[in-house]
Length: 492
Image 1 (tube, rainbow, N blue to C red):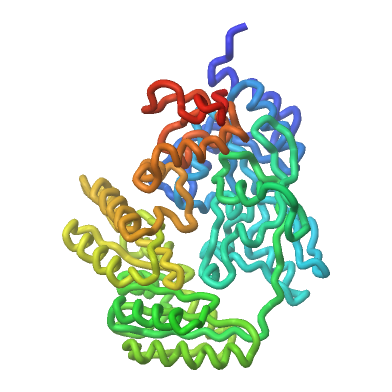
Image 2 (image 1 turned 90 degrees about the vertical axis):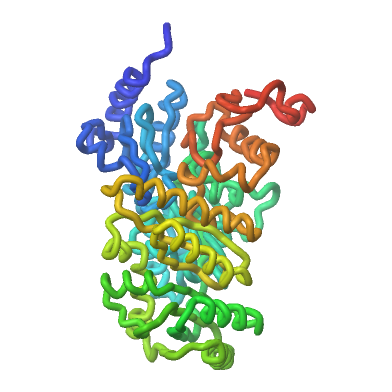
Protein backbone atom coordinates (compact mmCIF):
# COMPACT_ATOMS: atom_id res chain seq x y z
CA UNK A 1 0.00 0.00 0.00
CA UNK A 2 1.40 3.41 -0.95
CA UNK A 3 2.36 5.89 1.73
CA UNK A 4 -0.49 8.33 2.48
CA UNK A 5 -0.27 11.93 1.36
CA UNK A 6 0.21 14.58 4.06
CA UNK A 7 -3.50 15.47 4.07
CA UNK A 8 -4.52 11.80 4.22
CA UNK A 9 -2.11 11.16 7.09
CA UNK A 10 -3.41 14.15 9.04
CA UNK A 11 -7.00 13.04 8.47
CA UNK A 12 -6.19 9.57 9.81
CA UNK A 13 -4.43 11.04 12.82
CA UNK A 14 -7.32 13.42 13.57
CA UNK A 15 -9.70 10.45 13.67
CA UNK A 16 -7.31 8.39 15.81
CA UNK A 17 -6.60 11.19 18.27
CA UNK A 18 -10.27 12.09 18.71
CA UNK A 19 -10.95 8.48 19.63
CA UNK A 20 -8.07 8.35 22.10
CA UNK A 21 -8.02 11.88 23.57
CA UNK A 22 -11.58 13.08 23.08
CA UNK A 23 -13.22 15.52 20.70
CA UNK A 24 -12.22 18.67 22.59
CA UNK A 25 -8.53 17.71 22.49
CA UNK A 26 -8.25 17.87 18.69
CA UNK A 27 -8.48 21.01 16.56
CA UNK A 28 -8.77 20.86 12.79
CA UNK A 29 -10.98 23.85 11.96
CA UNK A 30 -8.91 26.30 9.83
CA UNK A 31 -10.06 29.35 11.80
CA UNK A 32 -9.12 27.79 15.15
CA UNK A 33 -5.82 26.47 13.76
CA UNK A 34 -4.79 30.04 12.88
CA UNK A 35 -4.60 30.80 16.62
CA UNK A 36 -1.48 28.62 16.79
CA UNK A 37 0.30 29.90 13.68
CA UNK A 38 3.25 31.50 15.49
CA UNK A 39 4.92 31.94 18.84
CA UNK A 40 6.02 35.28 20.34
CA UNK A 41 8.08 35.98 17.22
CA UNK A 42 5.21 36.87 14.90
CA UNK A 43 7.59 37.57 12.01
CA UNK A 44 7.33 33.85 11.17
CA UNK A 45 3.96 32.14 10.86
CA UNK A 46 2.48 28.93 9.48
CA UNK A 47 -0.91 27.35 10.04
CA UNK A 48 -0.52 23.88 11.58
CA UNK A 49 -2.08 20.91 9.85
CA UNK A 50 -3.57 19.64 13.12
CA UNK A 51 -3.48 20.71 16.79
CA UNK A 52 -3.81 18.35 19.75
CA UNK A 53 -4.05 19.29 23.42
CA UNK A 54 -3.10 16.27 25.54
CA UNK A 55 -3.58 16.23 29.31
CA UNK A 56 -1.37 13.28 30.34
CA UNK A 57 1.95 11.66 29.49
CA UNK A 58 0.05 8.70 28.07
CA UNK A 59 -1.86 10.97 25.70
CA UNK A 60 1.37 12.61 24.52
CA UNK A 61 2.76 9.11 23.95
CA UNK A 62 -0.29 8.19 21.85
CA UNK A 63 0.12 11.33 19.72
CA UNK A 64 3.84 10.77 19.14
CA UNK A 65 3.34 7.09 18.29
CA UNK A 66 0.67 8.01 15.77
CA UNK A 67 2.94 10.57 14.12
CA UNK A 68 5.90 8.17 14.12
CA UNK A 69 3.91 5.39 12.48
CA UNK A 70 2.87 7.62 9.57
CA UNK A 71 6.07 9.68 9.41
CA UNK A 72 4.21 12.90 10.18
CA UNK A 73 6.34 15.72 11.67
CA UNK A 74 5.26 17.24 14.96
CA UNK A 75 6.15 20.29 17.05
CA UNK A 76 5.66 20.78 20.79
CA UNK A 77 4.35 24.13 22.04
CA UNK A 78 3.82 25.55 25.52
CA UNK A 79 2.44 29.03 26.18
CA UNK A 80 3.75 30.33 22.85
CA UNK A 81 5.92 33.08 24.36
CA UNK A 82 9.13 31.98 22.62
CA UNK A 83 11.04 34.59 20.65
CA UNK A 84 12.97 32.57 18.07
CA UNK A 85 10.23 30.71 16.19
CA UNK A 86 11.06 27.49 18.06
CA UNK A 87 7.38 26.51 18.22
CA UNK A 88 6.61 27.46 14.62
CA UNK A 89 4.22 24.72 13.41
CA UNK A 90 4.27 22.70 10.21
CA UNK A 91 1.47 22.90 7.67
CA UNK A 92 1.99 19.18 7.03
CA UNK A 93 2.34 18.28 10.69
CA UNK A 94 0.85 18.11 14.18
CA UNK A 95 1.25 20.79 16.84
CA UNK A 96 1.28 19.25 20.34
CA UNK A 97 0.14 21.96 22.78
CA UNK A 98 0.89 21.18 26.45
CA UNK A 99 -1.07 24.00 28.10
CA UNK A 100 -3.59 21.56 29.64
CA UNK A 101 -0.78 19.69 31.39
CA UNK A 102 -0.59 22.17 34.25
CA UNK A 103 -0.53 20.15 37.47
CA UNK A 104 1.98 20.86 40.19
CA UNK A 105 2.37 17.21 41.15
CA UNK A 106 4.50 17.66 44.26
CA UNK A 107 6.12 20.32 46.41
CA UNK A 108 8.78 18.41 48.35
CA UNK A 109 10.11 20.93 50.88
CA UNK A 110 12.36 18.54 52.89
CA UNK A 111 14.30 17.77 49.69
CA UNK A 112 13.81 21.24 48.15
CA UNK A 113 12.24 19.86 45.00
CA UNK A 114 9.07 20.30 42.99
CA UNK A 115 7.62 18.02 40.32
CA UNK A 116 5.51 19.78 37.70
CA UNK A 117 3.95 19.21 34.30
CA UNK A 118 5.19 21.20 31.27
CA UNK A 119 2.14 23.49 31.05
CA UNK A 120 2.66 24.90 34.57
CA UNK A 121 3.31 28.66 34.43
CA UNK A 122 6.76 29.65 35.70
CA UNK A 123 5.55 31.98 38.44
CA UNK A 124 3.07 29.40 39.76
CA UNK A 125 5.95 27.25 41.02
CA UNK A 126 7.16 30.09 43.25
CA UNK A 127 3.61 30.81 44.40
CA UNK A 128 3.20 27.17 45.42
CA UNK A 129 6.53 27.12 47.27
CA UNK A 130 6.33 30.59 48.86
CA UNK A 131 4.19 29.60 51.91
CA UNK A 132 7.05 27.27 52.87
CA UNK A 133 9.71 29.96 52.50
CA UNK A 134 11.05 28.73 49.13
CA UNK A 135 10.95 29.85 45.49
CA UNK A 136 11.93 28.85 41.93
CA UNK A 137 14.85 30.97 40.72
CA UNK A 138 14.70 31.21 36.88
CA UNK A 139 12.58 34.28 36.11
CA UNK A 140 12.14 35.20 32.43
CA UNK A 141 10.43 38.54 31.89
CA UNK A 142 7.40 36.57 30.70
CA UNK A 143 7.29 34.47 33.89
CA UNK A 144 3.65 35.35 34.51
CA UNK A 145 2.64 33.58 31.28
CA UNK A 146 5.51 31.36 30.06
CA UNK A 147 5.46 27.63 30.83
CA UNK A 148 8.08 25.46 32.49
CA UNK A 149 8.10 23.13 29.49
CA UNK A 150 8.97 26.01 27.19
CA UNK A 151 11.65 27.18 29.65
CA UNK A 152 13.17 23.70 29.49
CA UNK A 153 13.12 23.71 25.68
CA UNK A 154 14.88 27.07 25.41
CA UNK A 155 16.99 26.91 28.61
CA UNK A 156 15.46 30.22 29.65
CA UNK A 157 17.22 32.55 32.03
CA UNK A 158 15.90 35.86 33.29
CA UNK A 159 17.03 38.89 35.20
CA UNK A 160 18.45 36.87 38.10
CA UNK A 161 20.47 34.40 36.02
CA UNK A 162 23.66 36.35 36.81
CA UNK A 163 23.75 34.86 40.31
CA UNK A 164 21.46 31.85 40.01
CA UNK A 165 22.03 30.53 36.51
CA UNK A 166 19.67 29.30 33.83
CA UNK A 167 16.92 26.67 33.73
CA UNK A 168 19.48 23.89 33.23
CA UNK A 169 20.96 24.66 36.65
CA UNK A 170 17.59 24.09 38.33
CA UNK A 171 16.31 21.00 36.52
CA UNK A 172 17.22 17.66 38.07
CA UNK A 173 15.02 15.27 36.14
CA UNK A 174 12.75 15.01 33.13
CA UNK A 175 10.13 12.56 31.99
CA UNK A 176 10.11 12.69 28.20
CA UNK A 177 8.34 11.03 25.31
CA UNK A 178 11.01 10.11 22.79
CA UNK A 179 10.40 10.53 19.05
CA UNK A 180 9.56 6.83 18.73
CA UNK A 181 6.89 7.09 21.44
CA UNK A 182 8.74 5.66 24.44
CA UNK A 183 8.30 7.28 27.89
CA UNK A 184 11.63 7.55 29.74
CA UNK A 185 13.15 9.44 32.66
CA UNK A 186 16.36 11.44 32.35
CA UNK A 187 17.83 12.20 35.77
CA UNK A 188 15.54 12.37 38.79
CA UNK A 189 15.31 13.86 42.28
CA UNK A 190 18.88 13.02 43.27
CA UNK A 191 21.40 15.85 42.92
CA UNK A 192 23.81 13.92 40.69
CA UNK A 193 22.56 10.93 38.72
CA UNK A 194 25.28 8.54 37.48
CA UNK A 195 26.14 8.27 33.82
CA UNK A 196 25.82 10.81 31.04
CA UNK A 197 23.96 14.03 31.83
CA UNK A 198 21.15 13.39 29.37
CA UNK A 199 18.85 15.80 31.21
CA UNK A 200 21.45 18.51 30.60
CA UNK A 201 21.52 17.56 26.91
CA UNK A 202 17.74 17.76 26.67
CA UNK A 203 17.41 21.18 28.37
CA UNK A 204 17.90 23.78 25.65
CA UNK A 205 17.44 21.31 22.78
CA UNK A 206 14.47 23.38 21.57
CA UNK A 207 12.06 20.47 21.23
CA UNK A 208 14.23 18.57 18.74
CA UNK A 209 14.90 15.55 20.99
CA UNK A 210 11.43 14.77 22.33
CA UNK A 211 8.53 16.19 24.35
CA UNK A 212 8.91 16.74 28.08
CA UNK A 213 5.94 15.62 30.18
CA UNK A 214 7.21 16.01 33.77
CA UNK A 215 9.96 18.15 35.26
CA UNK A 216 11.77 17.89 38.60
CA UNK A 217 13.03 21.35 39.58
CA UNK A 218 15.17 22.62 42.41
CA UNK A 219 13.62 25.00 44.96
CA UNK A 220 15.72 27.60 46.79
CA UNK A 221 15.14 29.06 50.21
CA UNK A 222 13.89 32.65 50.02
CA UNK A 223 16.73 35.09 50.85
CA UNK A 224 16.77 36.86 54.19
CA UNK A 225 17.04 40.30 52.59
CA UNK A 226 16.47 41.74 49.10
CA UNK A 227 17.69 45.27 48.25
CA UNK A 228 17.01 46.98 44.94
CA UNK A 229 18.57 50.10 43.48
CA UNK A 230 17.73 52.19 40.42
CA UNK A 231 20.48 54.44 39.04
CA UNK A 232 20.17 57.00 36.23
CA UNK A 233 23.16 57.78 33.96
CA UNK A 234 23.67 60.23 31.13
CA UNK A 235 24.99 57.51 28.80
CA UNK A 236 25.29 53.76 28.36
CA UNK A 237 29.09 54.18 28.57
CA UNK A 238 28.79 55.46 32.12
CA UNK A 239 26.34 52.73 33.08
CA UNK A 240 28.55 50.08 31.51
CA UNK A 241 31.52 51.39 33.47
CA UNK A 242 29.55 51.02 36.69
CA UNK A 243 28.68 47.42 35.82
CA UNK A 244 32.33 46.52 35.22
CA UNK A 245 33.37 48.22 38.46
CA UNK A 246 30.73 46.36 40.49
CA UNK A 247 31.65 42.93 39.14
CA UNK A 248 35.37 43.76 39.23
CA UNK A 249 35.06 44.51 42.94
CA UNK A 250 33.93 40.93 43.54
CA UNK A 251 30.26 41.77 44.10
CA UNK A 252 27.87 39.37 42.35
CA UNK A 253 24.38 40.87 42.48
CA UNK A 254 21.31 38.75 41.93
CA UNK A 255 20.61 40.97 38.91
CA UNK A 256 22.06 43.90 36.97
CA UNK A 257 19.76 45.15 34.22
CA UNK A 258 20.29 48.06 31.82
CA UNK A 259 17.93 50.00 29.56
CA UNK A 260 18.91 52.76 27.13
CA UNK A 261 17.04 56.01 26.38
CA UNK A 262 14.77 54.56 23.68
CA UNK A 263 13.79 51.58 25.84
CA UNK A 264 13.07 53.95 28.72
CA UNK A 265 10.90 56.07 26.44
CA UNK A 266 8.86 53.00 25.48
CA UNK A 267 8.46 51.88 29.10
CA UNK A 268 7.33 55.34 30.18
CA UNK A 269 4.74 55.43 27.41
CA UNK A 270 3.45 52.00 28.40
CA UNK A 271 3.56 51.65 32.19
CA UNK A 272 4.60 55.14 33.43
CA UNK A 273 7.53 53.74 35.40
CA UNK A 274 8.85 57.23 36.30
CA UNK A 275 12.52 56.48 35.72
CA UNK A 276 15.01 59.39 36.16
CA UNK A 277 14.29 62.18 33.68
CA UNK A 278 16.96 62.82 31.09
CA UNK A 279 18.62 59.43 31.60
CA UNK A 280 20.53 58.00 28.65
CA UNK A 281 20.58 54.71 30.54
CA UNK A 282 19.33 53.24 33.79
CA UNK A 283 20.69 50.38 35.84
CA UNK A 284 18.60 48.17 38.09
CA UNK A 285 20.82 46.39 40.59
CA UNK A 286 19.41 43.85 43.03
CA UNK A 287 21.24 42.11 45.86
CA UNK A 288 19.92 39.32 48.04
CA UNK A 289 21.18 37.07 50.80
CA UNK A 290 22.13 37.39 54.49
CA UNK A 291 21.41 40.86 55.86
CA UNK A 292 24.99 41.72 56.86
CA UNK A 293 26.43 40.71 53.47
CA UNK A 294 23.77 42.55 51.51
CA UNK A 295 24.17 45.81 53.45
CA UNK A 296 27.94 45.82 52.94
CA UNK A 297 27.74 45.01 49.24
CA UNK A 298 24.87 47.43 48.67
CA UNK A 299 26.95 50.35 49.93
CA UNK A 300 29.69 49.32 47.52
CA UNK A 301 27.27 49.11 44.59
CA UNK A 302 25.88 52.56 45.33
CA UNK A 303 29.40 53.99 45.55
CA UNK A 304 30.46 52.54 42.19
CA UNK A 305 27.31 53.88 40.53
CA UNK A 306 27.96 57.41 41.80
CA UNK A 307 31.66 57.27 40.93
CA UNK A 308 30.77 56.35 37.35
CA UNK A 309 28.36 59.22 36.80
CA UNK A 310 24.99 58.25 38.26
CA UNK A 311 23.10 61.53 38.67
CA UNK A 312 20.20 59.94 40.52
CA UNK A 313 20.08 56.86 42.73
CA UNK A 314 16.88 55.45 44.22
CA UNK A 315 16.69 52.64 46.75
CA UNK A 316 13.47 50.67 47.17
CA UNK A 317 12.19 50.97 50.74
CA UNK A 318 9.83 47.97 50.50
CA UNK A 319 8.41 45.35 48.14
CA UNK A 320 5.97 47.85 46.63
CA UNK A 321 8.75 50.23 45.62
CA UNK A 322 10.84 47.28 44.43
CA UNK A 323 7.99 46.21 42.14
CA UNK A 324 7.72 49.79 40.82
CA UNK A 325 11.43 49.80 39.92
CA UNK A 326 11.12 46.48 38.10
CA UNK A 327 7.88 47.43 36.33
CA UNK A 328 9.56 49.25 33.48
CA UNK A 329 12.14 46.53 32.85
CA UNK A 330 9.66 43.66 33.03
CA UNK A 331 7.36 45.35 30.52
CA UNK A 332 10.10 46.51 28.15
CA UNK A 333 9.52 44.11 25.25
CA UNK A 334 5.78 44.68 25.05
CA UNK A 335 6.20 48.40 25.75
CA UNK A 336 8.12 48.93 22.50
CA UNK A 337 4.81 48.47 20.72
CA UNK A 338 3.91 51.96 22.01
CA UNK A 339 6.65 53.58 19.91
CA UNK A 340 6.82 51.26 16.89
CA UNK A 341 4.18 49.27 14.98
CA UNK A 342 6.63 46.38 14.41
CA UNK A 343 9.89 45.22 15.95
CA UNK A 344 12.31 42.31 16.06
CA UNK A 345 13.58 41.08 19.43
CA UNK A 346 17.19 40.02 19.12
CA UNK A 347 19.22 38.03 21.64
CA UNK A 348 23.00 37.83 21.67
CA UNK A 349 25.84 37.60 24.17
CA UNK A 350 29.12 39.49 24.44
CA UNK A 351 31.87 39.63 27.05
CA UNK A 352 30.78 42.08 29.74
CA UNK A 353 33.90 44.22 29.21
CA UNK A 354 32.88 44.78 25.57
CA UNK A 355 29.55 46.40 26.47
CA UNK A 356 30.51 50.05 25.86
CA UNK A 357 32.17 49.32 22.51
CA UNK A 358 29.37 47.09 21.23
CA UNK A 359 26.65 49.56 22.29
CA UNK A 360 28.50 52.32 20.43
CA UNK A 361 28.72 50.07 17.36
CA UNK A 362 24.97 49.36 17.56
CA UNK A 363 24.27 53.11 17.79
CA UNK A 364 26.41 53.75 14.71
CA UNK A 365 24.71 50.89 12.87
CA UNK A 366 21.32 52.35 13.74
CA UNK A 367 22.29 55.85 12.61
CA UNK A 368 23.81 54.59 9.36
CA UNK A 369 20.80 52.43 8.45
CA UNK A 370 18.06 54.73 9.73
CA UNK A 371 16.65 51.84 11.78
CA UNK A 372 16.00 52.59 15.45
CA UNK A 373 17.30 50.14 18.04
CA UNK A 374 16.19 50.09 21.69
CA UNK A 375 18.56 48.23 24.03
CA UNK A 376 17.40 46.21 27.04
CA UNK A 377 19.76 43.66 28.51
CA UNK A 378 21.18 41.61 31.35
CA UNK A 379 24.23 43.78 31.79
CA UNK A 380 25.88 41.59 34.41
CA UNK A 381 26.48 38.70 32.01
CA UNK A 382 26.53 40.59 28.69
CA UNK A 383 23.24 39.17 27.38
CA UNK A 384 21.88 41.78 24.94
CA UNK A 385 18.25 42.09 23.87
CA UNK A 386 18.27 44.75 21.13
CA UNK A 387 14.79 45.65 19.89
CA UNK A 388 14.98 46.56 16.20
CA UNK A 389 12.09 48.87 15.30
CA UNK A 390 10.39 49.16 11.91
CA UNK A 391 7.08 49.58 10.13
CA UNK A 392 6.12 46.59 7.97
CA UNK A 393 3.71 48.77 5.97
CA UNK A 394 6.62 50.86 4.65
CA UNK A 395 8.32 49.08 1.72
CA UNK A 396 11.86 47.97 2.54
CA UNK A 397 11.75 48.66 6.28
CA UNK A 398 11.28 45.02 7.23
CA UNK A 399 14.27 43.97 5.13
CA UNK A 400 16.46 46.74 6.60
CA UNK A 401 15.43 45.71 10.12
CA UNK A 402 16.47 42.12 9.40
CA UNK A 403 19.82 43.33 8.06
CA UNK A 404 20.44 45.38 11.20
CA UNK A 405 19.36 42.46 13.38
CA UNK A 406 21.83 40.17 11.62
CA UNK A 407 24.61 42.76 11.82
CA UNK A 408 24.13 42.93 15.60
CA UNK A 409 24.62 39.16 15.84
CA UNK A 410 27.77 39.52 13.73
CA UNK A 411 29.00 42.09 16.26
CA UNK A 412 28.42 39.60 19.06
CA UNK A 413 30.36 36.88 17.26
CA UNK A 414 33.19 39.27 16.39
CA UNK A 415 33.63 40.16 20.06
CA UNK A 416 33.83 36.52 21.10
CA UNK A 417 30.18 36.14 22.07
CA UNK A 418 27.20 34.09 20.97
CA UNK A 419 24.15 34.45 18.73
CA UNK A 420 21.81 33.61 21.59
CA UNK A 421 21.80 33.74 25.36
CA UNK A 422 18.36 32.47 26.30
CA UNK A 423 15.85 32.86 23.47
CA UNK A 424 17.18 29.95 21.43
CA UNK A 425 17.97 29.52 17.74
CA UNK A 426 14.65 28.22 16.39
CA UNK A 427 14.11 29.23 12.77
CA UNK A 428 15.14 32.84 13.32
CA UNK A 429 18.86 32.25 13.81
CA UNK A 430 19.50 28.92 12.12
CA UNK A 431 21.19 30.68 9.20
CA UNK A 432 23.68 32.27 11.62
CA UNK A 433 24.88 28.96 13.06
CA UNK A 434 27.57 28.46 10.37
CA UNK A 435 29.01 31.87 11.27
CA UNK A 436 29.64 30.63 14.80
CA UNK A 437 30.38 26.93 14.19
CA UNK A 438 32.24 24.91 11.57
CA UNK A 439 30.53 22.24 9.49
CA UNK A 440 32.21 19.61 11.66
CA UNK A 441 30.84 21.28 14.81
CA UNK A 442 27.33 21.30 13.40
CA UNK A 443 27.54 17.69 12.26
CA UNK A 444 28.73 16.60 15.69
CA UNK A 445 25.77 18.36 17.31
CA UNK A 446 23.41 16.67 14.89
CA UNK A 447 24.75 13.24 15.81
CA UNK A 448 23.01 13.81 19.14
CA UNK A 449 19.78 14.82 17.41
CA UNK A 450 19.96 11.76 15.16
CA UNK A 451 20.51 9.47 18.17
CA UNK A 452 17.20 10.67 19.64
CA UNK A 453 15.28 11.23 16.39
CA UNK A 454 16.68 9.27 13.44
CA UNK A 455 13.48 9.79 11.45
CA UNK A 456 13.79 13.56 11.74
CA UNK A 457 10.12 14.20 12.60
CA UNK A 458 10.54 15.92 16.00
CA UNK A 459 10.45 19.70 15.45
CA UNK A 460 12.29 19.46 12.12
CA UNK A 461 13.83 22.49 10.48
CA UNK A 462 14.80 24.18 13.73
CA UNK A 463 18.24 25.16 15.11
CA UNK A 464 20.34 23.80 12.22
CA UNK A 465 20.51 25.52 8.82
CA UNK A 466 20.19 22.22 6.91
CA UNK A 467 19.42 18.69 8.08
CA UNK A 468 22.55 16.51 8.08
CA UNK A 469 23.53 12.91 8.79
CA UNK A 470 19.97 11.61 9.36
CA UNK A 471 19.70 10.82 5.65
CA UNK A 472 21.69 13.92 4.61
CA UNK A 473 18.72 15.71 3.02
CA UNK A 474 19.43 18.34 1.82
CA UNK A 475 23.00 19.41 2.43
CA UNK A 476 26.18 20.75 0.90
CA UNK A 477 28.31 17.72 1.78
CA UNK A 478 29.50 15.52 -1.07
CA UNK A 479 30.49 11.91 -0.51
CA UNK A 480 30.60 9.98 2.75
CA UNK A 481 30.66 11.94 5.99
CA UNK A 482 34.11 11.51 7.64
CA UNK A 483 32.56 10.36 10.94
CA UNK A 484 30.63 7.67 9.08
CA UNK A 485 33.72 6.65 7.12
CA UNK A 486 35.70 6.33 10.36
CA UNK A 487 33.03 4.08 11.86
CA UNK A 488 32.16 6.64 14.56
CA UNK A 489 28.65 7.44 13.31
CA UNK A 490 25.85 5.61 11.57
CA UNK A 491 23.90 7.10 8.67
CA UNK A 492 20.27 6.16 9.31
